[in-house]
Amino acid sequence: MFSPSWAATMPLTSETNTGDADARLLEACRDGDGDAFGELVRRHQQRVFRLAGRFFRRPEEVEDVAQETFLTAWRKLHTYRAEAPFEHWLTRVCLNTCYAHFRGRRAKPALETELDPDLASVSPDPTLRIDVNRLLSTLSPADRFVLMMMYGEGWSVAEIADNLGWSKSNVKVRLFRARK
Image (cartoon, rainbow, N blue to C red; front, top):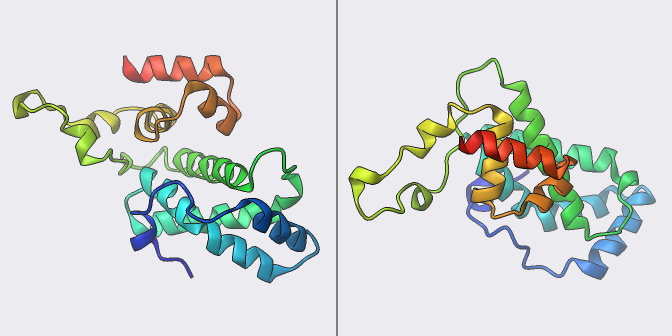
């Protein structure tokens, strides 16, 4: 149904106009039109796969998280209040799904979360490069997650707090501990 191989390389910004078209599709979804939701999935799957691909490297995990994101969105569509674009609400659903997936893997070996190679090799001197992935694997999933959102995605403390439902203080404490 989805194609993570191309979706994981797409930019996080949606190229389609999501305003009025999404509103019409959402109205049809609320009236029980499954085809309208299928169109919403088609319009937003690149963003969901891209975001999930930032946290998980194995394609089957990215697919699982994306599928769970859309299933959760379908089940919780009644909670969307249209105060912000649908894309923002769906992003939060995806982030919560990623975080839940992290929590479910606590007892397993280190996550395969990796930063972009460009981020890990910003120094021109190879002796000064840090093995970012090795360091990230030593962090708790929540700390790794908040670092990825801050530095991998470029979100502010306020955006992370809003999207995850955490307090700004909690985000700051997690960032402090993770950096330490």
